[in-house]
Image (cartoon, rainbow, N blue to C red; front, side, top):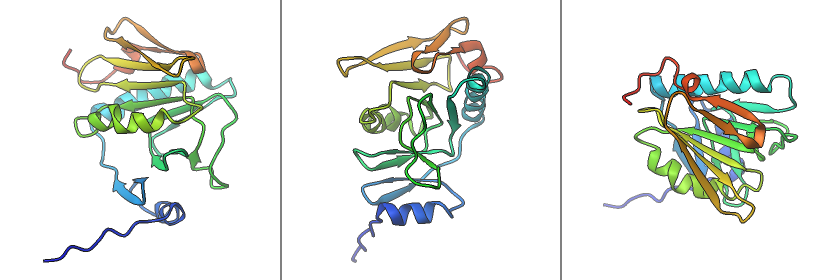
Length: 191
């Protein structure tokens, strides 16, 4: 029995294929990986955070994008779809399609059982290579818990965890406040 080697795609082949695909794919080192659907909680949390950001950024020269805006980590070649990304800088896109952001300042990922290890590990390792990235936010969909990693001047990342519904998470890079009660509004949580 023989196995066929995986055919690796170039970035250009990936983008051409992705732009006509009905499902989203991550791309890394020539391989593509299909993105799976999200749960009710995942969708509600993403919508809640997007609504909060929209309200606070609408009169400012900032842009917030939800999960269909692709982000490229130039240094590693990763193309991925964060749940939310924000920039208050002039957005830089890969090309004229304006569907691949290169300079997010904040990235938010809503954790799921199938992606949590990746979001905390390899994905965060890739994201840390983005010179523009100041804050990386992980949001639990199982219980009230928001973990905010902030890049320090030394290049290290400082973690702050927020676990109560009466607290507020400050996104310093884009000057936005995320009230925990609003993040978790209409979300079925255990804690």
